[in-house]
Amino acid sequence: MRISAPLRRAGGKGGKFLPVSGRLLPGALLRPAANGGKARTMLDILGHLFAPLPMFMVIGGAGLIAVAQAGTSTAFSALASLKPLLRARPDDERDSARALLFKVEAVAQLKGLARTDRLENPHPFISQTLTTLANAADAEHFALWVHQAIHDRRARHARVIGFWNSLADAAPAVGMGGTIIGLIGMFAQMSDPDSIGPYMALALMTTLHGLILANAIAGPIANRLAALSEQEIAWQQDMADRMIAIARREGSLFQRTSMREVA
Image (spheres, rainbow, N blue to C red):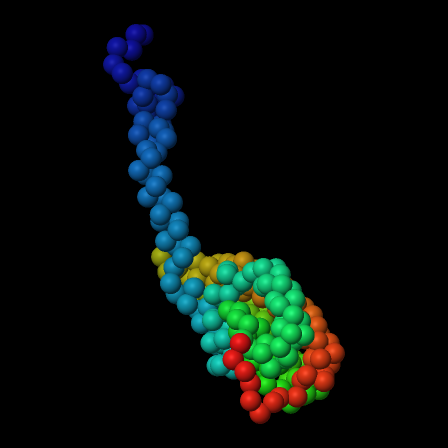
């Protein structure tokens, strides 16, 4: 029997009408989605991925734990450390300090240590060290001050690094807490299938955000700050030792005079 219509019967006379090609799905569904549809799908996925509630739960919870451990002042210092995190150049600062030491030694030999504060440098530690060297009573007083200054800087760096490590340690635990909350809500709404999805999404998203905060944000920041701190303290300690040696060598000229000539 000839089929003249664009439809044919499947499974005999009582079968369902199928397209001539034998496909059950409409052609629009079988064709690949248009670029606009793909873009909307990606935006929907990103919207769910960065939903504000799971992010707020993880960041807020982990942040409160870190602040409780480190203190409010350290938390503000940790946020302020993000600026030098990107702009710090410890190698350039080390080279600048080494070049300045030759000038310090020349000035000390020609005009005395009291004139070393006339040398200028934009780095706060170097500028303060030069001023203290010029105004210290003797080499031992200067050595005591510079060692204490470096010790204080190392302690400040350690507190800031500790804050970011605390944030990295707390984030996965807070994310797991959000997962438990989501599972509890999901099991409590088992009779309503429409309510299961949001709670499941909350359970998964908090875990994901906890892992991201710990391993992609807070942890790398702590490691980077630790590396910068080690490099910075190293060149500052080297500079302090060299200045102490210069001060002791120029001990006969280290005493301050009642009148200082203008260079």
